[in-house]
Amino acid sequence: MNNDDFTLLFVFFFVFIMLINIVMVAYLYYRRKTRGITFPTLDKNEILYVEKTASGRSMKNFMTQYGGARNTLKVVVTPNELWLTSWFPFSLLIEIFDLEHRINKEDIINIEQEDKVFRVTFKTQDELEKTVEILPKKIQEFEVVIANMKKA
Image 1 (tube, rainbow, N blue to C red):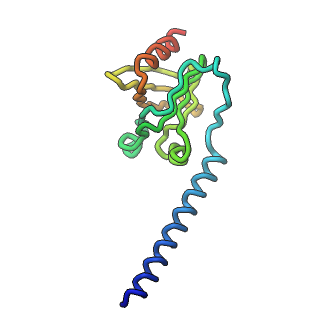
Image 2: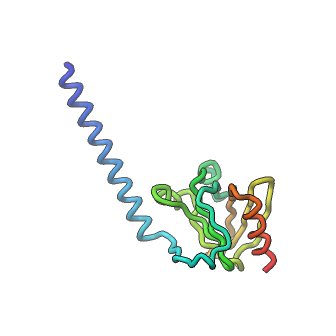
Image 3: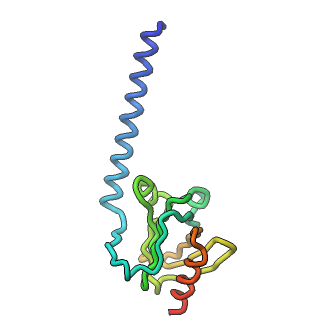
């Protein structure tokens, strides 16, 4: 095999791999747009807490416990809800790691704080119990907002 054959083979495989990646991203984007949870636009006075670079993980299964989001989890607290989501391009994978939730205050069963980690247990619409761990960067601010949410 001479250099020209090797170069042609390399270019062919590179283009093939790029096409596969484009198709995969397009599929994930399509699936996200058709099945994702809807998060409405809020006024600033409706938001009690927002952080776009938190970390977290779901306790759903082995993959979600050891995967999760590192500095890509968006946490929003409103007077009645806790939102967990992410921003593009990480939002394409957030469903796989079970970190896209819109949790009503009434559905929160328990919130525990262990050092810097907040463990939130809640009921889903299907009456299943789920647990997520959130590691915010603004720990004290999140702690105050969550404490007020538990009281009300």
